[in-house]
Image (cartoon, rainbow, N blue to C red):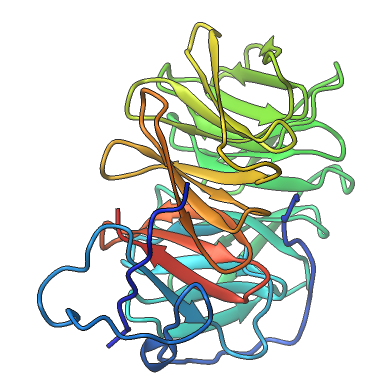
Length: 337
C-alpha cells in the first residue's frame, strides 16, 4: 500500500523535452517506495482509518532508467500516462509502471487521451504526432514541416486532436486516422499551451499573446494579456479560460470575450506551469521553480502545498486525485483535493 503523507498548507521554465533509447519495458510497484515531499518516508497513523485527508501528497519514484517526467494524462484504461526523457510511461494508481520508448527516438512532449481510446503525444525533436494504443503499439505521423516543434496537444470539440507548434509557429490538427492540417501563425505569436474552450473554439497561449481559432481553422482571434508571458491554458468550471504566466508569476483568468483578470502568486519566482480543472471545481496548477502545487478558486483565492522539485504538468486521475509529474525528482505524485 502507498504511504499516505499529510502536508501543511504553505502560504523556471521546466519543460523536459529530451532523450532517446532502446525499447524496453519495466514494471515497479511504487507502494513501498512512496515518499514524502521532504524525501523521508512517513506513514500516516490514520492510513487505514478511511480516505486520506485533503492536501495529502503521495509520491511514486520511477524506475532508475526513467528520468524527467513531463506531460501527464488519464487514459481510457484507467491508468496515468506520462512522457519522459526516453518515451512514454504508464502508471497504475497503485504505482506500477510500464514504459515504452518512441520507435524513432523522438523526444515525447505533451500527451492526451484521444476520443478513439488511444493516447496521443507530440514528438518535439522528431517533428511528429504519435498515436499509441493502451497496449503500447505506436504509430508516428510526421509533420510536413520538420522544424515545427510540436509541444502540447488536446482533444478538440470536433473529435480531432489539436496541437501547438512553437519553432515554426502555428496550430495543427490531426484526425484519429492521421490526417494533418497546419495553420501557420505569422504575427509573432508562439503558441505553447492549447485547450478546447467553453465556446467551442481552440484556445492557445504563448509568450505575449492568447488567441483562439475555430475547429474550421477560421481566425485566429488574438488578444494581448495585460502582463504578458502566458504559457499553459485550461478551461475552468466557471466557463472561462485559465492561464499560467511564468515570468509574471501569476495565474490569469480570461473570459471567452477576452477580458483578463490576474492573480499574483504569494511567493516570488514560483514559475507556474501546468494547470487543470479539478473535481472540486477549482483550478490546480504546478509551480515549477517554487516546488508547490497551487489551488485557485474561480474567485481567485490561492492555496499552496509544498512538493519535491519540480512539478511540471498536472491532470485529474481516475481516482479523483490530482496527479502531477516531478521533473527533477524523477517521480509521479498525486495530491488529494
